[in-house]
Figure 1: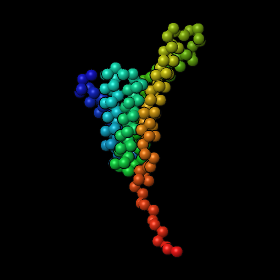
Figure 2: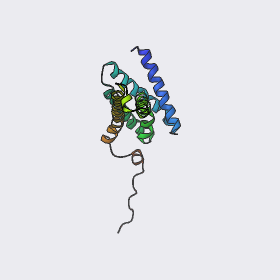
Figure 3: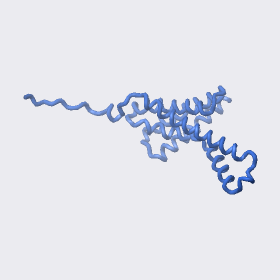
Figure 4: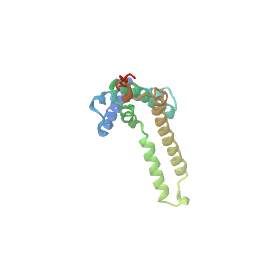
Amino acid sequence: MVIYNLIEQCFWFGVAACGFGILFNIPHRTIGYVFVIAFCACITRNIMYELKFNQVLATFAGATVVGLLSIWSSEKKASPPMIFSIPAVIPMVPGVYIQKLILGLVRMAESDASHYSNNLLPETAQYALKASFILMAIALGVAFPMLISKSETAKDYFALPPKKNETKT
């Protein structure tokens, strides 16, 4: 893949993530971080594609980058990590596979089993499995860094320390 095509694709990936962030009404101060996180996730995923890694594994790596950078960004901007991770990961959803799965199911529903083409059922099952595994990779990739990171939230991190009891008995 030519480097310019990679950068252009990742740029539009980041723009899509910012669009989802605006749609979900995230704070305006976090939009730039969402763009950078989505850009880095797209670069990670596409480089792994070019290195001939499996699509599910490459998506998992991109989603893990989203999870890691979301934790870092949440500490910088004192916001929950989900504000950064959800908009940044939505462009990774395998829409083409889901569309082909739905079309295959509709074709199967509108005809008898005896009129299926030879490839309809295996192709539909293949699209279902690909979409399912990619969606699981996205969910696990985003959640895994958040599960292993520190347990205190940004709200607890920036909270005032408790007051000492000044009464002496």
